[in-house]
Amino acid sequence: MPCNLSVVILTLNEETHIARALQNVQGWAKDVIVLDSGSIDATCDIARGLGVRVVHRDFDTYANQRNFAIREIEMSTEWMLFLDADEYLLDPLKAEISRTLMAPKVDGYYLKRRVYFMGKWVRRGGYYPSWILRLFRRSKAACIRDMNEHIQVEGATAHLTQDFVDHNLRGVGDWTTKHNRYAHFEALEILGFQQRRQRGEKNPMAKLWGTGPEIKQWIREYIWYPILPPLVRPFVMWVYRYVFRLGFLDGRAGLIFHFLQGCWYPFLIDVKYLEMLNKNEDLL
Image (cartoon, rainbow, N blue to C red; front, side, top):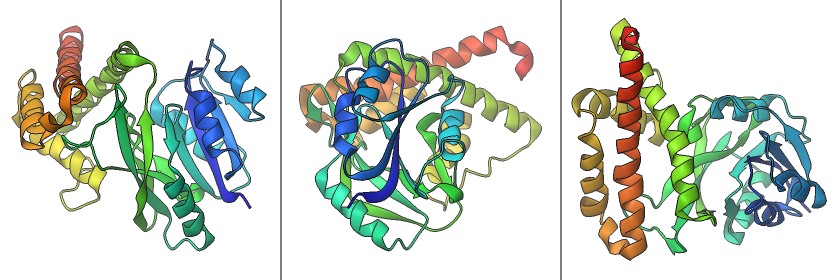
């Protein structure tokens, strides 16, 4: 009997990954839906060929895309699971979800992500385990942060024990292209923080004694952005990840990943942020 949940996979030109992602959950989940934002490759054809429903929505922000899936897509289940096209569930996690949803005790569950880079599992540097709230009751959930798609649940949450996998097959060129796009949205978030600070407003999602995402947001807004200057903080992050969180033990692939993710990417965010300030000096 299929698990009583709907899996929604967001796509844009994901022909490399989509068959793997869909075949991983077909027959296990009651409903599988692709939410596509305008693919021009074979993504949608592959999905339809596998018998999966494809819904189109033009992309504006990641949060709006996920909120559209939560609120607007018709599906037959109350429980919903988000996956990206380059992700898949390990069998122990599927079994754990099936058992859990037979008698769920809370309204949302954090899942444990395992990242692969250049074919290697990135175990250190603070990247494993990464807890992400992906499984939830639709009626209780909303996406409230554009990047890192923080899902907020009105109700209690819990953590499952098994892993899902993030494994991009398209190489470092695709990785850097994608993170170049992400950096734009992260830079906009820094601008938003500066504007709230000027107005004396506080972010209700930044809590020192809250959930993992709320603690991370507190660190961003009370330490990372206001204390550490742009172009310096990426190197602080790099040293913290690679040295103090033992990223150097991940070998050559780990060296590349931790430098790109922990230094190059935050550096790019800061550069884009400074560029935005130069173009919009009246924002602050």
